[in-house]
Structure formats: C-alpha cells, structure tokens
Image 1: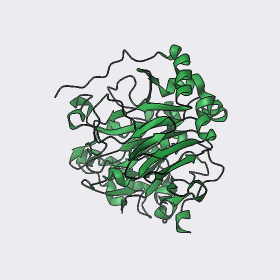
Image 2: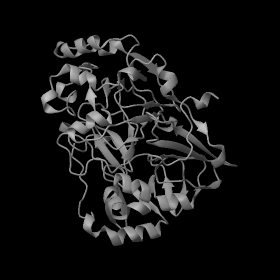
Image 3: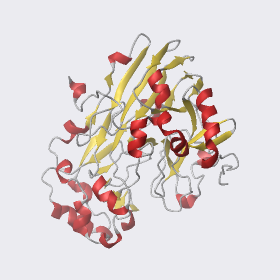
Length: 420
C-alpha cells in the first residue's frame, strides 16, 4: 500500500502567523477551523471506527503501526519513536494555509485561551482524542507530576467518555481493568515485574475489570493502573504523553520493557522499587474505586432549553484540582441555540450537520489521511465568553463534544452527583 503524504508547502511559519491569525479570528468571529490530527501507535491494533479510510490505516508506514488515535485541539506532541516533527499537533486552516494551534496560542494567547491561563501555562495545557482499538491495551499508568518532572515532563491525569456514535460495535474486549484488587501488596506487583520475560507476568490477576457502557465515562488519576478496553473513547486529559506499561503480554503480543520505563530516569530502569513507587497506591487499592471515579452525564439545566440539551460528560476534580472537563451538546433538527462558556474549548462534531457561528459543521462518513474536514473547531476564549450560535440544519440530531482547560468553571459537578 502506498504511504499517504501531506504537503508542507501550505504551512505558515511561526514567525509569520500574526497577520493570518488575525484574519482567521476576524473571519470566524473567534472560531478557528482545525484539521484532523492522526496519531499511530506501534504496539496497538486500530479499532477502525474513527472514520479514517481503510487504505490510510498505516499512512505513517507499517513500521510505525496503525493509526488508532485522532487528537483534538492539541498543542501537545505525541511521544512516539520515529515520530514526525509535528506528530500530535493540531493545525488551524484558513485561506488555503495552515499553522499549528500551538503557534497560534503562542502568538495570541490571551485572546485564544484567556490571560490567566496563558500567563500560568504559556500554552493550551490540555488536549483530547479519540482512542480506538480492536482489543484491550496493556495495564499501564501515567506518571504524576512529581515523577514526570524527573524526566523533564508533566504528569498525565485523563478521563474517558464512550460516545454512542463512535461505538456501533464493541470490538474484542469491552471491559477495562482499573486499579488493583483491594488487599494487593507491593510485593505481588514486584513479582510481576520480576517475571516480565516469562510470558504473561500476571498483573491482571491483581486487578478487576469493569464492563464499559456507552454514554458513560471515568476519571483516571495519574499513578492509577488501567488497561483500556475496546470501546472507542473520547479522552480529555492533561497535555502530556507519559506512561509506563506494567503488563508484559497482551493478546499474545510482547510488550517490551522499554515501554515500562520510557519515562523513568535512566538510572532507575531496573529499580523495581522505584518503578512501583510511581503508582498512587491508595487510589489503586481503593475499596470504592467505581464510586470515586465513575461518571454518567448530568444535564446542565442552565445551558439547556427547547430543542437543545447540554450535558456534563467529564467533571469532578483530581486531588482537588479542576484540570479539565467536557460537555456534550445535542441540538434537535431545525433548532438553534446560543452557548456561552466561561472559557475556550476544543469542539468535535460526532453526529449531524449544521453550523457553529459562521463555520459549517458536517460529520464525515470517511476521511482520507491529509484531508480537511468540517467537524472540528477551536472555540477561543473571546468567542466562548461572547456566546456562539449553533444551528442544526440537518434531519438528525446535531451532537458535538467540547472539552475545557483547567479552572474554567466556577462550579463543576462532583463525581457521583449523577446519583442525586
């Protein structure tokens, strides 16, 4: 199969984007059109539900692995070996030219993400993606901020939501192992690491699986082990790509030791006690893990009305901090509404067609690698706080997911509030 290529001739250099960014913001009234950002993973098997054309599943080359992720409004680079220089970065497109959202934020930060956020982080510090696999992936964790800093990186809390529109089939294993069975000891985990080269190291024997349910989600704090199952997942998360795989064999495929220690200081690559120390032990063996991490949508009555419903799908805090959140907006055929948010967001359309302000929205049936679409938008702080009109011009519900950065909302539902 021929490898698809994307021209770089239309890319505007960082030093030259000021004028075109101003024109794009004026033309879109604060909305920026984004193009699809595809990310391969060499150790995973694509789930084939994120609408990428079959002939492009291996567009980066078979040696890079299949494309099983699409990243949204990302200023975070993918931490892949043999990566392309811009892998993981979202592009803004305007007047036949394109430039990275990262460069746009660096150029016009306060307008795009608000002065407070820009001053604190100097970037859009979060991103989201579709994560789509045929089967389960290895039991792994993402380092917390303390341990990630040892390799010059940031920690990675994340969250899950399972959009019904992207999950027409379960694929091979719609269950996710999360955490460790209460009562598990560090010595048991250590033995699993000692047995790494003996085939299945048995780490899943120490965990428990939860059946995945469409239209629900989870919060996954850093340092918590998890082996995501095969539902296509929308994942708002912190802007980092650190991880450590704790499972040596998955679906008969070897997981190299290098993927356990890729974000561990080199002098600690064989220090089993240090590797285990990265785990948030109390959260892993939590006797009420589901109660503390499971999410179901909560209708935001203040932002809903006749013909449209805005739902919280990712909410709550991690260690007391509001790091990211997300909502799902559904607009019925023929209806329109004005959504006013307190901060910027990345929008992806998952069903229907219509418009977001002046920008057309259309959910594609199939996307070629390198092709532009009309389903993704970055809603800047200026546009969000002024309010954006959304209209459904199609014959089915228009559904969009949008995620927000840290400390955007003065009030956020708490985990478990869906039960009240």
